[in-house]
Length: 314
Image 1 (cartoon, rainbow, N blue to C red):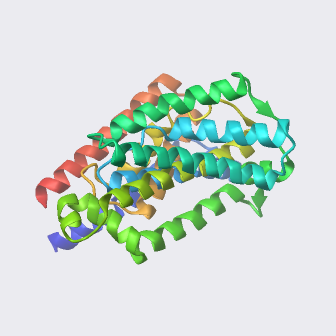
Image 2 (cartoon, rainbow, N blue to C red; image 1 turned 90 degrees about the vertical axis):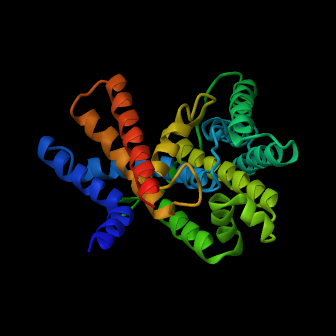
């Protein structure tokens, strides 16, 4: 009986946490369960969920990607300039955004594997500063606004009462679930995170796996940037500040482990929802932004501590 309780806690703990938050906030704020507010929460969660999808892969390999916020900013800055200032077809512009993100992620992977840096913390920290600086340079530190309506639709449009951005997130989550559980590369990602030496000895090209992981992380940061760009109708070089922290929090709250090899895309989605609900609820209650940061930091610490306890028990 105790074993089943542990399994339920590990698999559904984040879901229960989200439900408790929703119930509590629905009582303390009469505005929380309104249609407008719920759709707002879904839109807020969408950007973080997309960025966190890539972060999940890095953490599954016992790594981290600190550059996602800056890569997001660089990607949309170049794409926004291409669309607005140079009149490039918006479809091509969106592809440019994704290509820039993937290229930055590929660079992270190559820096880690080819230069044999000791930890992705170093390569992605460097890229965080390089990408942010390049975003400021290419835009001359100014926002780029006036995007086409269908680009805005990606971030702020609706299908019925459901934000299109959240529908995009569900499609991505379903794809990642299949990718991580049904493809060779997905299984290799778990293997490298669980035991890199055993994975190498079994014939897995760990360097190739890590290169793919960080390339995909950069790509997903760019995809989150597209949603952000559409939502605010602008691309700006200071976009994505601290997004890496929210992405890491979503992954860890969703049940992944910093030690690697443990985590699911559905858990990451729930983690992103929890963060969005917490931020939204605190805003409705009039809590200062500085105190909101304290609350989110505390939630992250508790999530990591729960993972430590789970590992000790195992």
